[in-house]
Length: 138
Image 1 (spheres, helix red, strand yellow):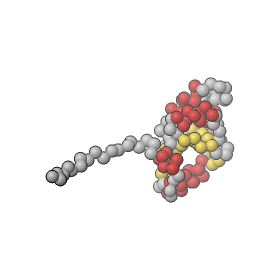
Image 2 (cartoon, one colour):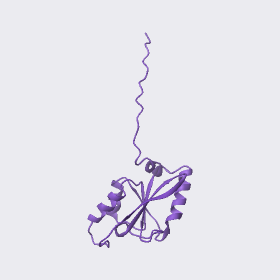
Image 3 (cartoon, rainbow, N blue to C red):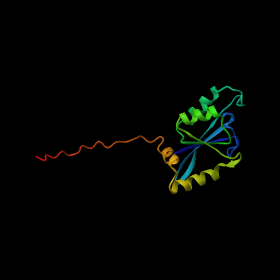
Image 4 (spheres, rainbow, N blue to C red):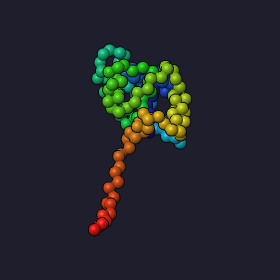
């Protein structure tokens, strides 16, 4: 599963979703986690009512199941949820490493329903179409 973190310093969740200069994307499972990629954003990122910048960020995290952020506006949250990404607001300056460790522990146990659903993101649904044997009961 892929998880995104809005960050300025790459160590902590210390950025508002719309203002984040960096989004760190980690791959995580019950066995471990690793940094997959860092997406950097340039330009004027401050709050200005321009929601076009949100589309770029949402596209960047489209294959993530969760985005951790220190803040996210209502319309941005709605757009993130519509992209089937679960936004989680955490206290500013929360350490990314600590969040990864906690999430990994949850994955080792019995994840809550919303997280089980998030784990399915990116997995193709498979159907077993094996032919059933027909028997003649005449």
